Image (cartoon, rainbow, N blue to C red; front, side, top):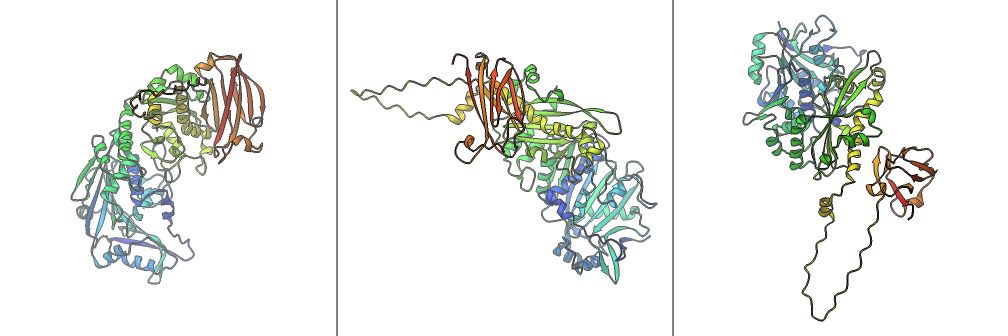
Length: 612
């Protein structure tokens, strides 16, 4: 049976689809980052056990025989003025004259391969093979699996100078080996006939290639190892920016967590160098890399090393259970755990947060996520990452700033993993209820999303507030020390002036800590000994110069319209930007929320105890 490239004939009256996936890939810093992230995510989804092994190889060869029949269709696309395809002119010329070109092979092992019907008898109900090859923009993944939107697989042809890739799979269920190629161009006219945008390397019948001799030739030519179930992707004329170092940097920056846990290991080879990345070599290899055009761009090597050591330690920490129902007031819960000093001294702390997920058409699901924290004075800013089923979700961490704390949020349990997977954007950058249909699937969708994103911050703010009761003199010495000049010899007959008497220190009775869209006020240990007392709180949005209180306008905010929660006190006055309190209980706490999160808030607190 004839094997080769086939493009489907179409009519001008049919929809003329022009690929524009390049716009979607603006979510990534490079094609290499998008390619590695998509390939490893799909491989993790197809695992047959807990562990996954991948191999990424670079090679050079002539492609004649495997790409015969494509050149005429590519040439026809050049004549279509409306098409602006990212075809590499040098790669195309090399293809025309039969010159050598660089190719990339990506292989996974200990996976299922592309199982399911191939589409010969119509669109199958469920088929990984059909979804991967033919179903653009669609996916039937659920549960802990990473993909939902079905657009990430477009990156394979986009990383080829001639927009082409091959897939060879061995299936774990029936042992069949199948080979197929795909070229995505655009609608074009050739020899007065109109063709659709996609072409396929397959048998004349439309079936994937199953001839063992052709598969053996393909495996030999591209150095493919497919003796066990899994998937091999071959990308001819791979883009120049995709290099071994770029692959290593993208792999580690996005999948450091499963690598550190021993779940993922990788071999990377280019014919001269063979590198193995696993839990034992991760630190050494990361120390040799640059992070340009990756998620870690701008990170220093020592920062990467500290982060990876943190990730190595996290699975060894036994988590403490903390109920999400306490999120409005975590202070008593955290104080009862007696962990303030451990946190203050930089120990890694782990917390298990149970949650109830409420699907609209099923019974409630008991699940949980885990939060790891480590206070680190060496950090320039907060270092946070969110992981769902070994997949890094970057955007939630961008909203956590201003704290010298390392935070990891891990959502591996089946219930929360499925929920967050349903909430993910097409390229797995964020969790949102917009455009994902989440509210139609779950009764408490917004509540869970807010909890997963905000609970770690509230936990850190609570611990930081408790730590203010300790005086970190080492920190003061580090940043506020004064170098004393050497004292000169005393001259005879000169009377040295007596140093001025030091001013008595101010007594701090109350402390202010941040809250979500507002602030909290509590007594200091000294304040608890000075009860009862009266406090006056004045607020205003920050200004570039001058006293911000003078620029306050009632249209900015009004205390009477904000959410004010309190205990251990009575409110004497509440108007515009002013609150006056009579505090009588050591358990006093005041929380004021509802301010504009996009403006900086200034707070002035005046306190006086009776007799002062």
